Structure formats: C-alpha cells, structure tokens
Image (tube, rainbow, N blue to C red; front, side):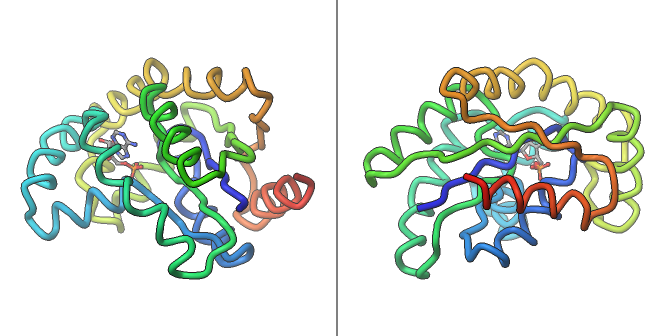
Length: 192
Ligand code: AMP
C-alpha cells in the first residue's frame, strides 16, 4: 500500500492537492476536517462536540479524531484502492502514534510525508479568499485563522519532527499554480 500524509498549515492547499492525487494514484482520501464537517451537518453528538473546538479555531481532542478514523483504513481493500492519502491528519504526535499503530495492525505503514511550505501572509490571504465561497465560518474571521495557525505551530509542527526521525519527510514548495504544485507532489510520489 502507498500511504501518504499530505502535511502543511491551514490554507497550504492540502485539500485541493489531495483530491487530485487521490484520482491520479487511486488512493483513498481521508480528510478529518471533511469527516468532522459531515458529522456537524448530520448533527451527531460527535459533530456537536467537535463544533465547539472548530469554531474557536482549536484542534478537536485526539480521542474524538482517532476514534473517527479507526474504521476508515479497512475501506482501502473494500474499495480496491492502492493506499491512503491523509489530509489534515495526524495533527498531533499522539495522533501520529495512534496512526502508526493502526497501520501496523494492518501490516502496513506510512511511506512518505509530503510537507507543503507556504508563508504565513499567503496562508491568511488564501483562507480568507476560500471563506468567501466555502461557507466555512472558521475561514471568515481573522482571529480564528490566527488561532488555527498558532495551533499548527505549537501542536502540529512537532508531527513533522516525529516522522523526520524516520527520514520520511519531503518538503514541497506550496507556492505557484495548482498544477505546478501537483506536478511536484506527483514526482515525489513516483520517486518513492
Ligand atoms: P481542516 O478542514 O483540515 O482545515 O480542519 C478544520 C478544523 O477541524 C480544524 O481547525 C480543527 O478544529 C478540526 N480538525 C480537523 N482535523 C483535525 C485533526 N486531525 N485533529 C484535531 N482537529 C482537527
């Protein structure tokens, strides 16, 4: 299985690129943000709990997120996919450890962490722009965006160090056209 983590701050283009890579490499796309938004839409207990954190620009507690992705890995075989592209997960070292254990149980592992590099000014600009059409309330308020970037710097960046210990991280410039960035990501996967 080719299991890849698409890593990077909010607004770095993970969702856009994951959707394209999933098609190209026949991967299962797991976006915890999308899964959480679906729970909110369906007004589930999990969704209502998660919403409080999401609206405040904070990470949803690890236990909720880890529990949510537990069964999704089995879909790879059911749907005849070549592997998984994780988008927005793992966002803490505890999530990364849980993911490693989950994959090990299925006799597989993470092959590569592709880290999109985009500067802070560009991130805020892109998220505010996305907020105009996405309807996402967490994309429309500058204070919430700042909080999300801070959560990323303090809790999520250490995840890159965790995988760097195993030499799995490859940085990709996240500035340029969507197709240029896609080419760079595609080449990195083909060279694995
Ligand atoms: P995203 O769509 O990936 O930008 O995620 C939107 C929001 O959902 C984040 O700001 C978090 O509040 C929450 N979220 C998504 N994925 C995770 C995760 N892996 N761990 C904790 N919170 C998450």
